[in-house]
Image 1 (cartoon, helix red, strand yellow):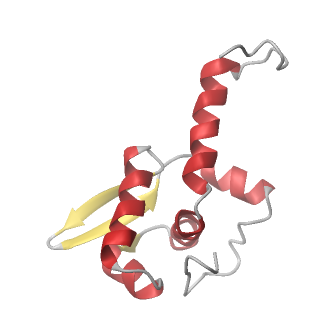
Image 2 (tube, rainbow, N blue to C red):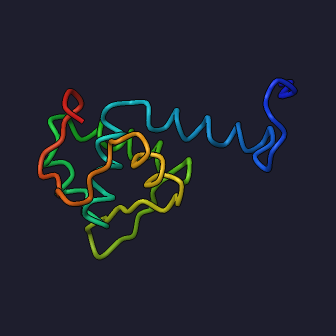
Length: 115
């Protein structure tokens, strides 16, 4: 991809590709809602996430897998429970700059229709 039209800066073509992938990861309403919720709660068990959204378990798992595979979130196991948290340091500033992130309010419900 020819990036000559963009100003020369530290981002470069690889940086644009990486940022574009992040925007793609956040472009789905459910993934955006999940990431926003995880930023507000720091870490959340998948069982709590599944109770908080109105999608079936396979759909939730698929979207969490996409976020994990792309390095946006990580998971950790504690017995049978799996906890997720945001690990990409670019996510909070991006959402904050878009006015999507309000850390003063902790979300309790989120859905695909209502991020």
